Amino acid sequence: MIPQAASAFFINRDFALYWGVRVASMMAFQMLAVAVGWQVYDITGSMLALGYIGLAGFLPAVFLVLLVGHVADRFDRRRVVQAGHGLEAVVALVLAGGSLQGWLSVTHIFVGVFLLGVGKAFSAPTLSALLPGLVSQQELPRAVGASSAAMQAAIILGPAVGGFLYIAGPTAVYAAGALLFVGSVLMLGLVRARPAPLPAEAAAGDNSVFAGLRFIRSKPVVFGAISLDLFAVLLGGATAMLPVIAKDLLHTGPEGLGLLRSAPAVGALLVSFWLARNPIHRRTGHVMFGGVAVFGLATIVLGLSPYFWLSLAALLVLGGADMLSVVIRSSLVQLETPDAMRGRVSAVNFLFIGASNQLGEFRSGVSAALMGLVPSIVFGGVGALVVVGLWMWWFPELARRDRLVEDHETPR
Image (cartoon, rainbow, N blue to C red; front, side, top):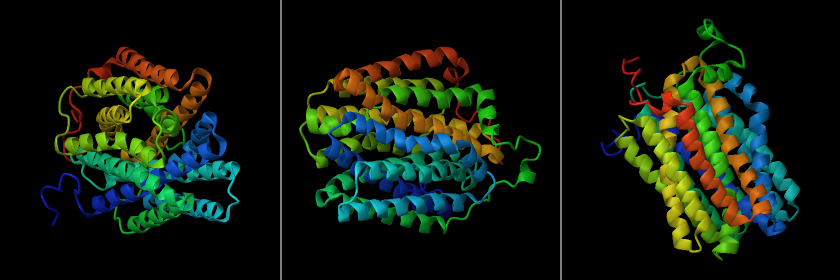
Protein backbone atom coordinates (compact mmCIF):
# COMPACT_ATOMS: atom_id res chain seq x y z
CA MET A 1 0.00 0.00 0.00
CA ILE A 2 1.37 3.40 -0.98
CA PRO A 3 1.73 5.79 2.01
CA GLN A 4 -0.64 8.72 1.90
CA ALA A 5 2.24 11.23 1.78
CA ALA A 6 3.48 9.58 -1.41
CA SER A 7 0.07 8.89 -2.98
CA ALA A 8 0.10 12.29 -4.71
CA PHE A 9 3.00 10.98 -6.79
CA PHE A 10 2.74 7.17 -6.95
CA ILE A 11 -0.92 7.00 -7.97
CA ASN A 12 -0.76 3.27 -8.68
CA ARG A 13 1.79 0.49 -9.29
CA ASP A 14 2.15 1.07 -13.01
CA PHE A 15 2.52 4.80 -12.58
CA ALA A 16 5.25 4.18 -9.97
CA LEU A 17 7.16 2.11 -12.55
CA TYR A 18 6.56 4.82 -15.15
CA TRP A 19 7.96 7.35 -12.65
CA GLY A 20 11.08 5.19 -12.28
CA VAL A 21 11.51 5.02 -16.04
CA ARG A 22 11.31 8.81 -16.21
CA VAL A 23 13.98 9.18 -13.52
CA ALA A 24 16.39 6.61 -14.97
CA SER A 25 16.19 7.73 -18.62
CA MET A 26 16.29 11.45 -17.92
CA MET A 27 19.11 11.06 -15.41
CA ALA A 28 21.10 9.13 -18.03
CA PHE A 29 20.44 11.76 -20.67
CA GLN A 30 21.52 14.60 -18.37
CA MET A 31 24.69 12.78 -17.35
CA LEU A 32 25.60 12.29 -21.00
CA ALA A 33 24.88 15.97 -21.69
CA VAL A 34 27.43 17.00 -19.05
CA ALA A 35 30.07 14.63 -20.42
CA VAL A 36 29.49 15.59 -24.06
CA GLY A 37 29.45 19.34 -23.37
CA TRP A 38 32.58 19.34 -21.22
CA GLN A 39 34.47 16.95 -23.49
CA VAL A 40 33.67 18.91 -26.67
CA TYR A 41 34.55 22.27 -25.12
CA ASP A 42 37.73 20.82 -23.62
CA ILE A 43 38.81 19.52 -27.05
CA THR A 44 37.77 22.51 -29.18
CA GLY A 45 37.52 25.53 -26.84
CA SER A 46 34.69 26.67 -29.13
CA MET A 47 31.35 28.08 -27.96
CA LEU A 48 30.00 27.50 -31.46
CA ALA A 49 30.80 23.79 -31.16
CA LEU A 50 28.55 23.64 -28.08
CA GLY A 51 25.77 25.09 -30.20
CA TYR A 52 26.31 22.41 -32.84
CA ILE A 53 25.75 19.74 -30.17
CA GLY A 54 22.21 21.04 -29.74
CA LEU A 55 21.67 21.08 -33.49
CA ALA A 56 22.90 17.49 -33.89
CA GLY A 57 20.55 16.31 -31.15
CA PHE A 58 17.57 18.15 -32.63
CA LEU A 59 17.78 17.10 -36.29
CA PRO A 60 16.39 13.56 -35.72
CA ALA A 61 13.21 15.02 -34.23
CA VAL A 62 12.70 17.05 -37.42
CA PHE A 63 13.31 14.14 -39.77
CA LEU A 64 11.30 11.59 -37.80
CA VAL A 65 8.40 13.56 -36.31
CA LEU A 66 5.70 12.18 -38.62
CA LEU A 67 6.99 8.60 -38.49
CA VAL A 68 7.33 8.66 -34.69
CA GLY A 69 3.75 9.83 -34.16
CA HIS A 70 2.38 7.22 -36.53
CA VAL A 71 4.39 4.45 -34.84
CA ALA A 72 3.29 5.55 -31.35
CA ASP A 73 -0.38 5.39 -32.38
CA ARG A 74 -0.12 2.01 -34.14
CA PHE A 75 2.19 -0.12 -31.97
CA ASP A 76 2.57 -0.97 -28.30
CA ARG A 77 3.92 2.26 -26.85
CA ARG A 78 5.92 0.41 -24.20
CA ARG A 79 7.88 -1.47 -26.88
CA VAL A 80 8.54 1.70 -28.85
CA VAL A 81 10.02 3.38 -25.76
CA GLN A 82 12.10 0.29 -24.98
CA ALA A 83 13.56 0.33 -28.49
CA GLY A 84 14.49 4.02 -28.16
CA HIS A 85 16.14 3.58 -24.77
CA GLY A 86 17.93 0.47 -26.00
CA LEU A 87 19.49 2.44 -28.85
CA GLU A 88 20.58 5.16 -26.41
CA ALA A 89 22.20 2.52 -24.18
CA VAL A 90 24.20 1.13 -27.10
CA VAL A 91 25.39 4.59 -28.16
CA ALA A 92 26.47 5.42 -24.59
CA LEU A 93 28.48 2.19 -24.45
CA VAL A 94 30.24 3.02 -27.74
CA LEU A 95 31.10 6.51 -26.45
CA ALA A 96 32.46 4.93 -23.28
CA GLY A 97 34.59 2.50 -25.27
CA GLY A 98 35.89 5.24 -27.56
CA SER A 99 36.86 7.44 -24.63
CA LEU A 100 38.56 4.55 -22.84
CA GLN A 101 40.57 3.51 -25.91
CA GLY A 102 41.39 7.09 -26.93
CA TRP A 103 39.98 7.08 -30.48
CA LEU A 104 36.90 9.21 -29.76
CA SER A 105 37.00 12.48 -31.75
CA VAL A 106 34.62 15.44 -31.89
CA THR A 107 33.15 14.01 -35.09
CA HIS A 108 32.46 10.69 -33.33
CA ILE A 109 30.79 12.57 -30.47
CA PHE A 110 28.54 14.47 -32.87
CA VAL A 111 27.53 11.21 -34.57
CA GLY A 112 26.78 9.77 -31.13
CA VAL A 113 24.68 12.81 -30.21
CA PHE A 114 22.73 12.43 -33.46
CA LEU A 115 22.00 8.75 -32.72
CA LEU A 116 21.02 9.60 -29.14
CA GLY A 117 18.62 12.09 -30.72
CA VAL A 118 17.13 9.30 -32.86
CA GLY A 119 16.49 7.19 -29.76
CA LYS A 120 15.00 10.12 -27.90
CA ALA A 121 12.85 11.11 -30.89
CA PHE A 122 11.04 7.77 -30.56
CA SER A 123 11.11 7.32 -26.78
CA ALA A 124 10.27 10.77 -25.39
CA PRO A 125 6.96 11.56 -27.17
CA THR A 126 5.81 7.93 -26.96
CA LEU A 127 6.48 7.88 -23.21
CA SER A 128 4.36 11.02 -22.83
CA ALA A 129 1.55 9.45 -24.86
CA LEU A 130 1.72 6.38 -22.58
CA LEU A 131 0.89 8.32 -19.40
CA PRO A 132 -2.91 8.81 -19.91
CA GLY A 133 -3.25 5.01 -20.20
CA LEU A 134 -1.98 4.58 -16.64
CA VAL A 135 -4.29 6.94 -14.73
CA SER A 136 -7.84 8.27 -14.91
CA GLN A 137 -8.63 11.57 -16.59
CA GLN A 138 -9.29 13.23 -13.24
CA GLU A 139 -5.88 12.06 -11.98
CA LEU A 140 -4.04 13.21 -15.12
CA PRO A 141 -3.09 16.78 -14.01
CA ARG A 142 -1.73 15.35 -10.76
CA ALA A 143 0.11 12.64 -12.70
CA VAL A 144 1.63 15.24 -15.02
CA GLY A 145 2.92 17.13 -11.98
CA ALA A 146 4.34 13.94 -10.46
CA SER A 147 5.90 12.94 -13.79
CA SER A 148 7.46 16.37 -14.05
CA ALA A 149 8.82 15.90 -10.53
CA ALA A 150 10.47 12.67 -11.72
CA MET A 151 12.11 14.47 -14.60
CA GLN A 152 13.32 17.30 -12.41
CA ALA A 153 14.68 14.91 -9.79
CA ALA A 154 16.68 13.30 -12.57
CA ILE A 155 17.79 16.67 -13.93
CA ILE A 156 19.06 17.48 -10.44
CA LEU A 157 20.86 14.18 -9.89
CA GLY A 158 22.05 13.61 -13.45
CA PRO A 159 24.29 16.65 -13.98
CA ALA A 160 25.61 16.57 -10.40
CA VAL A 161 26.48 12.86 -10.60
CA GLY A 162 27.79 13.29 -14.13
CA GLY A 163 29.99 16.20 -13.10
CA PHE A 164 31.54 14.31 -10.21
CA LEU A 165 31.93 11.10 -12.23
CA TYR A 166 33.72 13.12 -14.91
CA ILE A 167 36.57 13.55 -12.44
CA ALA A 168 37.31 9.89 -13.24
CA GLY A 169 36.98 10.66 -16.95
CA PRO A 170 34.17 10.66 -19.54
CA THR A 171 34.23 6.85 -19.78
CA ALA A 172 32.73 6.56 -16.29
CA VAL A 173 29.89 8.94 -17.18
CA TYR A 174 29.01 7.22 -20.45
CA ALA A 175 29.07 3.75 -18.85
CA ALA A 176 26.83 4.84 -15.96
CA GLY A 177 24.38 6.41 -18.42
CA ALA A 178 24.21 3.15 -20.39
CA LEU A 179 23.34 1.21 -17.22
CA LEU A 180 20.51 3.62 -16.42
CA PHE A 181 19.03 3.25 -19.90
CA VAL A 182 19.13 -0.55 -19.49
CA GLY A 183 17.33 -0.16 -16.16
CA SER A 184 14.57 1.89 -17.79
CA VAL A 185 14.08 -0.82 -20.45
CA LEU A 186 13.66 -3.46 -17.74
CA MET A 187 11.16 -1.37 -15.74
CA LEU A 188 9.09 -0.71 -18.86
CA GLY A 189 8.73 -4.43 -19.31
CA LEU A 190 6.81 -4.54 -16.00
CA VAL A 191 4.38 -1.71 -16.86
CA ARG A 192 0.82 -2.72 -17.72
CA ALA A 193 -1.03 -0.19 -19.86
CA ARG A 194 -3.79 -0.04 -22.43
CA PRO A 195 -2.35 -0.74 -25.88
CA ALA A 196 -2.25 2.06 -28.41
CA PRO A 197 -5.58 2.47 -30.26
CA LEU A 198 -5.92 0.16 -33.23
CA PRO A 199 -6.68 1.72 -36.63
CA ALA A 200 -10.28 0.52 -36.34
CA GLU A 201 -10.75 2.44 -33.10
CA ALA A 202 -9.84 5.69 -34.82
CA ALA A 203 -11.63 4.94 -38.08
CA ALA A 204 -14.01 7.84 -37.58
CA GLY A 205 -11.10 10.22 -37.23
CA ASP A 206 -8.10 11.25 -39.26
CA ASN A 207 -5.58 8.41 -39.47
CA SER A 208 -2.96 10.18 -41.57
CA VAL A 209 0.52 11.01 -40.30
CA PHE A 210 -0.34 14.71 -40.70
CA ALA A 211 -3.36 14.51 -38.37
CA GLY A 212 -1.37 15.72 -35.36
CA LEU A 213 -0.35 18.92 -37.16
CA ARG A 214 -3.91 19.59 -38.31
CA PHE A 215 -5.35 18.90 -34.88
CA ILE A 216 -2.93 21.25 -33.13
CA ARG A 217 -3.57 24.01 -35.65
CA SER A 218 -7.34 23.69 -35.16
CA LYS A 219 -7.12 24.08 -31.37
CA PRO A 220 -6.01 27.62 -30.38
CA VAL A 221 -5.41 26.62 -26.75
CA VAL A 222 -3.17 23.68 -27.74
CA PHE A 223 -1.38 25.56 -30.51
CA GLY A 224 -0.79 28.58 -28.29
CA ALA A 225 0.52 26.49 -25.39
CA ILE A 226 2.95 24.49 -27.55
CA SER A 227 4.21 27.45 -29.55
CA LEU A 228 4.68 29.52 -26.37
CA ASP A 229 7.19 26.95 -25.14
CA LEU A 230 8.88 26.87 -28.53
CA PHE A 231 9.62 30.58 -28.84
CA ALA A 232 10.14 31.46 -25.16
CA VAL A 233 12.79 28.79 -24.60
CA LEU A 234 14.22 29.17 -28.11
CA LEU A 235 15.08 32.76 -27.23
CA GLY A 236 15.60 32.51 -23.47
CA GLY A 237 17.40 29.17 -23.12
CA ALA A 238 21.01 29.53 -21.97
CA THR A 239 21.91 26.05 -20.66
CA ALA A 240 24.21 25.30 -23.62
CA MET A 241 26.47 28.12 -22.44
CA LEU A 242 26.80 26.79 -18.88
CA PRO A 243 30.21 25.17 -19.62
CA VAL A 244 31.45 28.60 -20.75
CA ILE A 245 29.80 30.39 -17.82
CA ALA A 246 31.31 27.89 -15.37
CA LYS A 247 34.81 27.92 -16.84
CA ASP A 248 35.30 31.48 -18.09
CA LEU A 249 32.98 33.67 -15.99
CA LEU A 250 32.67 31.84 -12.66
CA HIS A 251 36.07 30.06 -12.80
CA THR A 252 34.86 26.67 -11.62
CA GLY A 253 35.39 23.11 -12.86
CA PRO A 254 33.16 20.19 -13.88
CA GLU A 255 31.81 19.91 -10.32
CA GLY A 256 30.62 23.51 -10.50
CA LEU A 257 29.15 22.88 -13.94
CA GLY A 258 27.20 19.93 -12.57
CA LEU A 259 25.77 22.10 -9.78
CA LEU A 260 24.84 24.86 -12.22
CA ARG A 261 23.08 22.40 -14.53
CA SER A 262 21.25 20.92 -11.53
CA ALA A 263 20.09 24.26 -10.09
CA PRO A 264 17.13 24.82 -12.47
CA ALA A 265 15.89 21.35 -11.64
CA VAL A 266 16.03 22.01 -7.89
CA GLY A 267 13.65 24.92 -8.32
CA ALA A 268 11.53 22.93 -10.75
CA LEU A 269 11.37 19.94 -8.42
CA LEU A 270 10.15 22.05 -5.51
CA VAL A 271 7.45 23.58 -7.69
CA SER A 272 6.42 20.21 -9.17
CA PHE A 273 6.13 18.66 -5.69
CA TRP A 274 3.87 21.52 -4.69
CA LEU A 275 1.79 21.29 -7.87
CA ALA A 276 1.33 17.52 -7.51
CA ARG A 277 -0.38 18.10 -4.16
CA ASN A 278 -1.94 21.48 -4.99
CA PRO A 279 -2.94 21.62 -8.68
CA ILE A 280 -3.74 25.03 -10.15
CA HIS A 281 -7.54 25.37 -10.18
CA ARG A 282 -8.17 28.96 -11.26
CA ARG A 283 -6.60 31.60 -13.54
CA THR A 284 -4.41 28.95 -15.13
CA GLY A 285 -3.71 31.05 -18.23
CA HIS A 286 -2.40 33.99 -16.25
CA VAL A 287 -0.34 31.72 -13.99
CA MET A 288 1.25 30.05 -17.03
CA PHE A 289 2.18 33.35 -18.68
CA GLY A 290 3.46 34.68 -15.36
CA GLY A 291 5.78 31.68 -15.07
CA VAL A 292 7.25 32.34 -18.51
CA ALA A 293 7.77 36.03 -17.65
CA VAL A 294 9.69 35.15 -14.47
CA PHE A 295 11.73 32.69 -16.57
CA GLY A 296 12.77 35.57 -18.83
CA LEU A 297 13.69 37.84 -15.90
CA ALA A 298 15.78 35.11 -14.25
CA THR A 299 17.63 34.57 -17.54
CA ILE A 300 18.59 38.25 -17.59
CA VAL A 301 19.93 37.98 -14.03
CA LEU A 302 21.95 34.90 -15.03
CA GLY A 303 23.54 36.79 -17.89
CA LEU A 304 24.55 39.73 -15.69
CA SER A 305 25.71 37.72 -12.66
CA PRO A 306 29.44 37.71 -11.80
CA TYR A 307 28.97 35.49 -8.72
CA PHE A 308 28.54 31.73 -8.48
CA TRP A 309 25.89 31.96 -5.73
CA LEU A 310 23.84 34.51 -7.67
CA SER A 311 23.99 32.39 -10.82
CA LEU A 312 22.77 29.40 -8.81
CA ALA A 313 19.92 31.48 -7.38
CA ALA A 314 18.92 32.75 -10.82
CA LEU A 315 18.90 29.20 -12.18
CA LEU A 316 16.79 28.03 -9.23
CA VAL A 317 14.16 30.68 -9.90
CA LEU A 318 14.37 30.06 -13.65
CA GLY A 319 13.68 26.35 -13.20
CA GLY A 320 10.80 26.85 -10.79
CA ALA A 321 9.10 29.40 -13.01
CA ASP A 322 9.51 27.22 -16.08
CA MET A 323 8.03 24.20 -14.28
CA LEU A 324 4.96 26.20 -13.31
CA SER A 325 4.18 26.86 -16.96
CA VAL A 326 5.30 23.40 -18.16
CA VAL A 327 2.82 21.51 -15.97
CA ILE A 328 -0.06 23.71 -17.13
CA ARG A 329 0.93 23.44 -20.81
CA SER A 330 1.44 19.67 -20.64
CA SER A 331 -1.89 19.10 -18.88
CA LEU A 332 -3.74 21.24 -21.42
CA VAL A 333 -2.26 19.35 -24.36
CA GLN A 334 -3.03 15.92 -22.87
CA LEU A 335 -6.56 16.83 -21.79
CA GLU A 336 -7.48 18.41 -25.12
CA THR A 337 -6.17 15.50 -27.23
CA PRO A 338 -8.14 12.26 -27.90
CA ASP A 339 -6.25 9.06 -27.07
CA ALA A 340 -6.27 7.80 -30.68
CA MET A 341 -4.20 10.85 -31.67
CA ARG A 342 -1.95 11.28 -28.64
CA GLY A 343 1.07 9.69 -30.29
CA ARG A 344 1.00 12.07 -33.27
CA VAL A 345 0.26 15.13 -31.15
CA SER A 346 2.98 14.15 -28.66
CA ALA A 347 5.45 13.74 -31.54
CA VAL A 348 4.68 17.25 -32.81
CA ASN A 349 4.87 18.59 -29.26
CA PHE A 350 8.24 16.88 -28.82
CA LEU A 351 9.43 18.50 -32.05
CA PHE A 352 8.43 21.91 -30.70
CA ILE A 353 10.10 21.20 -27.35
CA GLY A 354 13.19 19.94 -29.14
CA ALA A 355 13.25 23.04 -31.28
CA SER A 356 13.06 25.21 -28.18
CA ASN A 357 15.80 23.28 -26.36
CA GLN A 358 18.22 22.01 -29.01
CA LEU A 359 17.73 24.86 -31.48
CA GLY A 360 17.81 27.20 -28.50
CA GLU A 361 21.25 25.79 -27.68
CA PHE A 362 22.33 26.33 -31.26
CA ARG A 363 20.92 29.88 -31.19
CA SER A 364 22.72 30.65 -27.94
CA GLY A 365 26.01 29.31 -29.32
CA VAL A 366 25.77 31.36 -32.50
CA SER A 367 24.65 34.54 -30.74
CA ALA A 368 27.38 34.15 -28.09
CA ALA A 369 29.99 33.79 -30.84
CA LEU A 370 28.64 36.89 -32.62
CA MET A 371 27.55 39.15 -29.73
CA GLY A 372 29.56 37.89 -26.79
CA LEU A 373 28.39 35.64 -23.96
CA VAL A 374 26.72 38.16 -21.62
CA PRO A 375 24.86 40.19 -24.31
CA SER A 376 23.51 37.00 -25.91
CA ILE A 377 22.05 35.72 -22.61
CA VAL A 378 20.48 39.08 -21.73
CA PHE A 379 19.07 39.35 -25.26
CA GLY A 380 17.47 35.94 -24.85
CA GLY A 381 15.81 36.88 -21.56
CA VAL A 382 14.37 40.06 -23.05
CA GLY A 383 13.15 38.03 -26.02
CA ALA A 384 11.24 35.67 -23.70
CA LEU A 385 9.44 38.65 -22.14
CA VAL A 386 8.48 39.92 -25.58
CA VAL A 387 7.06 36.49 -26.45
CA VAL A 388 4.85 36.58 -23.33
CA GLY A 389 3.32 39.88 -24.40
CA LEU A 390 2.76 38.80 -27.99
CA TRP A 391 1.22 35.43 -27.10
CA MET A 392 -1.22 36.97 -24.61
CA TRP A 393 -2.35 39.22 -27.45
CA TRP A 394 -2.42 36.57 -30.20
CA PHE A 395 -4.01 33.80 -28.08
CA PRO A 396 -6.53 35.54 -25.81
CA GLU A 397 -8.43 32.29 -25.24
CA LEU A 398 -5.29 30.77 -23.73
CA ALA A 399 -4.60 33.86 -21.61
CA ARG A 400 -8.20 33.86 -20.32
CA ARG A 401 -8.25 30.14 -19.52
CA ASP A 402 -9.55 29.85 -15.97
CA ARG A 403 -9.90 26.20 -14.94
CA LEU A 404 -7.45 23.62 -16.24
CA VAL A 405 -10.00 20.80 -16.50
CA GLU A 406 -13.13 22.89 -17.00
CA ASP A 407 -14.39 20.72 -19.85
CA HIS A 408 -13.18 17.39 -18.53
CA GLU A 409 -14.87 16.82 -15.19
CA THR A 410 -17.07 13.86 -16.17
CA PRO A 411 -15.43 10.53 -15.28
CA ARG A 412 -14.46 8.25 -18.16
